[in-house]
Image 1 (cartoon, rainbow, N blue to C red):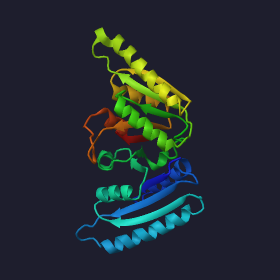
Image 2: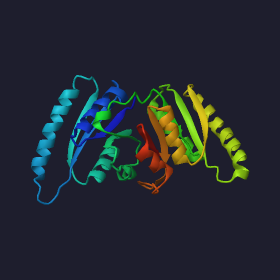
Image 3: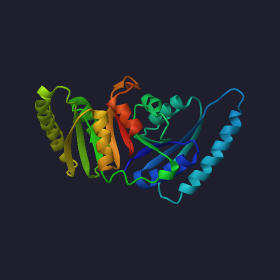
Image 4: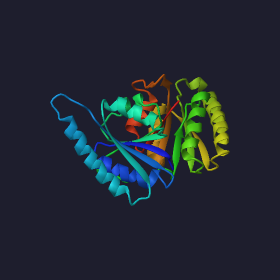
Length: 265
């Protein structure tokens, strides 16, 4: 289970049901959830009144969660939502942020700004609940040593000793038929080394090499295997996440059929 969870809320029904799902599936007695709502000051709006109303709504949510046995605290803040949430996540030592969003929402800007792991759940309130995310974890890797090591190290920290069914997947782009066989064999060998290293701390792990464009094949495989969550790593540059428009990572985040755990590398 995750230890210190940042949960931004806009008080929508999707956010409310997402919070209940988070409590049931991602938290236990040792977890703490930091529930945050940010009021953005805008000309012509009564910011003080909006903050008061948000604080009253927060009190009702905290009271509702009081029977779950999960530690939960709340903050109502004023400021730019992206900047405020990023500062709050780091100042409070949050290990992961959980974001529920509608299917047509673009979440990349939020992820780009906050260099901590995110569990992104794109759905509609009618499609909650998902299966338990730990029932089967699919980890995507590009086999670059530094990024792969970073993703797996952070994933191990977040799992905190929990052994889960896991599949590590890599997709090889077969652009040149004359070298396709060699590339596939090299990738298979490298992926097996990764699998063996993961098996030392998570014995229930398999590996599979796919053939084709990564963003197409990984999403196809995710729909086929229906994991509880998909794990991807994305490059960081300073405090910003380097997400290139059209990249594999962005395509997976925006189009995945299941929750995506995004880990900064």
